[in-house]
Image (cartoon, rainbow, N blue to C red):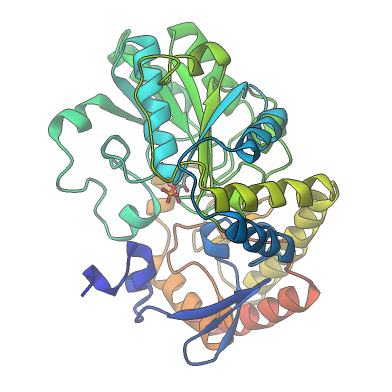
Amino acid sequence: MTPGGVHSPVRAFRSVGLPPLALTEAHGARVRDAAGREFVDWIGGWGPALLGHGHPEVVAAIERQARRGLLFGLVSPDEVTLAERVTARIPGLEQVRFVVTGTEATMSAVRLARAATERSGLLKFAGGYHGHGDAFLIRAGSGAATFGVPDSPGVTAGAARDTWIARYNDLDDVDRVFREAPGGIAAVIVEPVVGNMGCVPPQPGFLAGLRERCDRHGALLIFDEVITGFRLGPGGASRHFGVTADLVTLGKALGGGMPIAAFGGRANLMAKVSPSGPVYQAGTYAAHPLAIAAALAVMDVLDGDPGLWARLDAAGERLATGLKTAVRGAGLKAQVQRVGSMWTLFFSPRPVRSWDDADAVDRDRYAAFFRGLLARGVLLPPSAFETAFVSAAHGEAEIAHTLDAATAALAEVAS
Ligand SMILES: Cc1ncc(COP(=O)(O)O)c(C=O)c1O
């Protein structure tokens, strides 16, 4: 009935050698499957559950809005308020447009960058994932990497030709692309902290180096903050790392579980978007009232809880420290990489800084570790190349349960 039995490939669990897990409930830091088994969940809906699954204020806002109207198809005051609140948070975001998915946001940002620069080249990083637009399915991480299909059939040679690939965390490689495509690069798109080859932080100076090179070559810098926006801090990665991009994409945590994403940037660039300007972009479900209501509730919660990110960081630190101890105890060589509430355990003898490192991790061992945790009631991403997420709902009980399970599972995979 459905290809692979799923509506998004990584849900098929193929890389961990299991049938898909069918979930029926998600609350806080836990999910329940159709057989009634409960799991401590570190997938977090792939990022949206920053506040935990089904935060009560978010659910209440959605219920209130559903009674007022499901869909307007026209402007509503709430979307104006949300635009004001989102632009106030993210550096460089003077105007924003709401869309439904992260894929739409990145595709629209790249179209705008191409129109603004009158160039066609796009520089992306090997292992970086920016949704399933044709231009991005060239050496994309996570889902594509999991299945060993870095270039999807159906992506035209023309689309592939316009996408240039550099190594993440390697400014010399970025310089090489700018040399090889003189005057041809419209934009550099980057996950400021990569989530789609597992959690890979930028090396000091990498993001600032990208900013400098874009300025030098007249290209635009796009921060794909679909994962990092609101998760790394109140102002996303832009404020966290002190580097301002020309265009920013947001999604996931913004909607607290409802489908909403956004792209935005400097007013003079956004003025080129239809109907202010000629760059076409539209959507029946764009700024969907239920999603706007959910996102406003997320903003309320974030505004009322400035200590959230410090707590997430502390919880992440406790978990990572415990995992490192468990790894040592099992006599394994593995890396626990973490930035704030994003984390990954890589079965790799060396730190993972780029796709070259990620590609060399021990996938089989990750799959065995995943199965060992699942059997003990802990759900990790079913891929060695997807970051895991701490949410505000993960407390001591979930961390302790996970560390006990990880200690036992690591002992198994080591033997
Ligand atoms: C960094 C990044 N950009 C874009 C996307 C695409 O978002 P969506 O799945 O909502 O289309 C994702 C999805 O995982 C992502 O991680």
